[in-house]
Length: 475
Picture (spheres, one colour):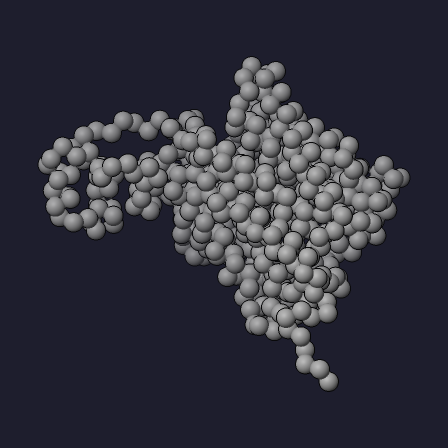
């Protein structure tokens, strides 16, 4: 009997493996550096380091949890009789990494190793937590965030992933979520909004004036996010297939349309084409096409883009500024509107515009959506959205209350820390030009580590510690 060929086993398709690793890398780049620099640019200067580090930390923490227990909860064998989650367990042995990729509950296989699939699914889990963080920037206690990330990944994300992608009950019933409109965006939008409620608001002056400190830096992050979405949606056929190409093209069509519609509405109602508004329109387009990317036609992508550029615009700029609970809950970057609202819009549009040919190309048995006479798909999409929303309302609340009352960790920073920002939390400043010592460094770990001669120079020879810095303006 011949020895097993570990280099090129019979099931390995090198083209599929190369594309899947490329797609995974593109999605990883969306998080680091994409969302890291976008968050750093969108917040006030005093929160640039903290906001970027929340994303950076989440990326690392999710990976370790993912290989030790969470991947199998999302994509392993069903745990018991409830079709909601897989059995937790590690995936880091060499045998696990080299075998053919398989979802045991659904029976789905791919023509590359399990290690490729594990990494691909990891970058989706990581970006979900990072998107969620957008609702909490500028006030969440970093220690609480360090605990929140593994808890939410374990008890919320894995349940949604298994239910829709891993062979759980929503997948069995035919709910379509091509690449995470529900698993990633509806969940992050819901959880972010709920967590923002439990954490509490920013300081009043920060809510009133939270102008971006670096719009151009935010645009760099937004550009990485947009182009990285080619891997986000193009990788979900799990093959370098024709449907992957359709998903990439439709993603860009819908995003462009959404940006143009959002900018047009800004011009009509606010008389100025806002760059940050264009970024919001870009994001809502990316989010809305995600559940539909490879199952709709190009004209369906245009319609979805028009819907995602208008409905979330109304949600953010009208309902969000006038009605409870949006006026009460401090959702820093508006993830409710850009992810929950846009995700539901895209999910329901999938039920309307999914084509029979697109479903077949994606290797699912659905006969298409309402345009193909299958109105049942609209109902299924609604059920899927309601399940993800309900799951995250409950689990996010339980996790926040657990951290606060059982672990005895405050969810929100103190008002004194909120006044100072990054220096108080991390002992660092995003834009430390020159060698000046800032007043807020007095008593900080970074000041205590400074050589004595630098402290003496700062105290007595015209350095910044003897002067008054201008008030925080947000730029």
